[in-house]
Image (cartoon, rainbow, N blue to C red; front, side, top):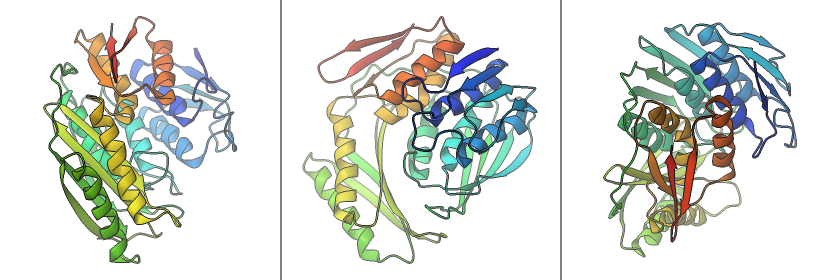
Length: 344
C-alpha cells in the first residue's frame, strides 16, 4: 500500500483528489494521512468527501474512515464500472474539482460514462464552469480525451444548487503535448455570468473594465453576458485567448464590497500577465494538466510547456505524481520571463 502525507507542500484537497484518481487509474491501494492538516478546518470537507465517494462508487472501492472531517483514509480501488451516475455534493462545494477527479480516474474506461452532479459551478479557490469548458476541456481534447458537457443550472456560494452533466468517452492513446511555436494573441473571448436578482449594470461595469484593460495592450475582446437563475446571488468573469495550440485563461468572481470594475480589471490583468511571459500554459492549467502530461510521457510522447511560474499547487502535484511514477523527471529551466518544463 502506498502511504501519502496529505500535509505535504500546499497540503490542500488537491493531494487527496489527485491521489485517489491515480489510485484508481493505476490500481494502487493508498493510505492518506494528515489530510488538510494545515487548514483552519482540517480533514475532509463535503466536496472532498464527494470526490472520493464518487470514485469509490465508480470502481467499487473499499475504504476506511471515509467521513466528512476525517484526516486519514484508506482507499483500495476495484474495477471501474462504466454507466450513468448521479451525485450531489450537498453544498456549494466545487463541482469542477469533483469532475476533474472523475475524468482523471476514469481515463481507462472502455465504454462511455455519464456523470450528473449537483453543487457549486462557480466558487472560490476552484476553476469556474467557463474555465473548465473553454480552457481545461479543450486541452484534454488536444490530447485525445473527448468529453461532452451540459450546464443545467449555475450554483454559487452559499446554497449551491448547480446542476451539470459530463459524458466521458474512451480514448485510443494520449497525444503529444507540446507547442514549440511562440503564441501571438490578438483577441480575447470572455463570459460573464450574473444571477438575475443582481443589477445589469454590475455586469456591464465588469465587462467594460476588462475590455478597457485589454485595449491598453492592443487586444480586442468579445465578452458575452448571461443572466442566470441560481439559489444564491453570484457573478463572475472568465477570459481566455487562443494561439496555435495555446489557450490561456483567467477567472475572477464577484464579491460583496468588491467593485465590479475591479473584478473585470483583475481578470484582464491576470490574463495579460500570462500573455506577457509567452507562456503556453497558464499557471492554473499547468497544475491541472500535470497528470495527463505524465501519461503522455509514459506513452513515449515528447512533453514540454512554458509557464509563468510554478505554483505551490503544481510543486505539490509533481511530488505526488512522483509517489506513483518515480521514473518521471520534471526538468525545469528558467528563461527570461517563464519556466520551460520538460518531462523526461
